[in-house]
Image (tube, rainbow, N blue to C red; front, side, top):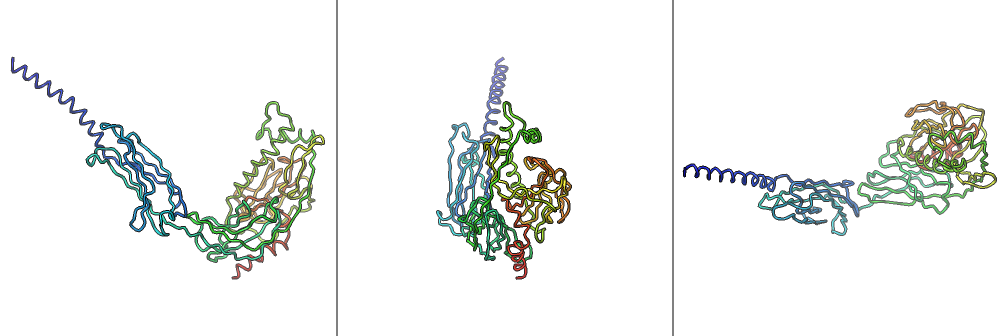
Length: 457
């Protein structure tokens, strides 16, 4: 009997020990986990200039974080940029913080660092009981190039005569490879491209003065390197004054009845809205949206010159409206809106064939809001021609169109009251006066002679 009780007691103790041992082993397995913290470093570029902010993400979902340190290593010496220690959840728990994100600013001059190779090192430690309660450790290193020297830009072309709404061509050299370079005109930037005739370091940029930029507008060459350093230099130029004509557009009930239904799908009538209020929404808001769409399309241009010589205009046509006309829209004798006309309206016979003004690639062919059926041709290096209010489009997107090929027929699509062609020229994101590009002498004096001289060097 005593032996039986003894066996029962031993069995009970064994079961109890087992019941205590299993969770203890499980607890220790959790507290002694061996997974290292996860580190991510988001460096915007492989080079760092005068100041560079970057983000660091660190996570440890098992034990929680104990410490994170960020340093830059240069010539064997560590310079700490940031260091954080995170609270514990208690002796039997892990860390309270399981993930964190730091924004770190590296300013080489403040640290006394010279240009050259360096490492960004991130060290992270968790609250695991591994390594005698010192936790798991993770280290991530990323090489960076410290570069605080601005690129040097040198103008090659010397003479640049421009007018408001006019364009020009600048050639220049940059003493290092830069992902972004070109001409800055006031608050507008015109990207440049390597010259197409094989001269190392030589770049070309078409630029423009917007119709509302005057003689005091600053013009200079600009280059930004990988590290974000910006080099600038002025170049010789002369801005000639120009005045634009005013025009009055009378909005009639008949015009509203004929035109507004075209926009039922894109700009549906709002409850309680009058026809005039809807017209204003189209003329203002949709016009602005269409301009933004055009500039987005024009950001993607081919780095080649498709075109040659003066651009053509619609044969046998009369000009109905000029570039940058200051338009007043009148309804019942009162001015209800003001806009600027960014093209030239050309009228011929109804549904006249519209030839491509010069060789280019079709970057857009379709409906475009107030412009109706529209074709946009990329002539290379940020130069575009635009054909709007077409009744029919005869070209496919991404097709190379030769000068004189028919792109469509004139019409009344979009915000047009009568059959005509709205023709525009665009440099990057800026509408310019087509008259310049129709003028063979202007092309020769301002564009062709420069290219021929550069190609012959």
